[in-house]
Length: 116
Length: 112
View 1 (cartoon, rainbow over the protein chains, first blue to last red):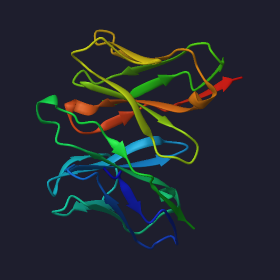
View 2 (cartoon, helix red, strand yellow):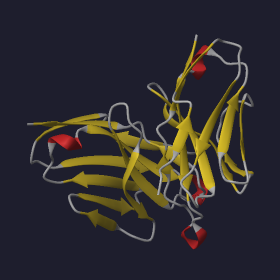
View 3 (cartoon, each protein chain N blue to C red):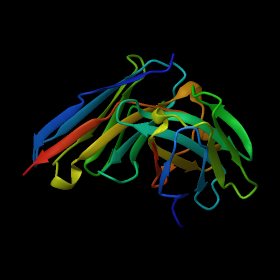
């Protein structure tokens, strides 16, 4: 199976602009989670989508939003970019965990966003 | 609250020796504990995980132990090799949901 893919891999934006990142999960996986990775804050959970619905949410401002399509591909959007939004944005896909409760998460290569 | 503390932040061991990384979590409802390895410039890679109904799990040179009463879990790497050098992250599921809370990471260096 092909792994998790993310596009674009690198992005440079200006403060105040908005950006959309894309994630294609492993075939058959219906859960997509998004994380922000920075040297100072580490890996922080943004949100998780399952079957086109946001199922879990982290502690990020409303400028961060996402959606999921019927083919399980997901996008995240950041509006009114701030310098502090510069980070590696990772998505992770997971199969339906069923009775196991929490499924194994496999990460994509990430999108490196730089805000100037 | 949701918090995972990971120690040490850096660890240097001689090739062939063992390495141990420890994590403590705060959420009593956490039931899934994965470990990830991240090499420079690469994605986090799932290397082993454990669920709350198991106390220990092994996979070749790596093992994870879980103490639910004390709310801590540990990663053990035996017979370390230079390719084990990376940053290792522990994580815990929050409220048993598909949401991982990560530790701050341990930079492991294996000295030849």
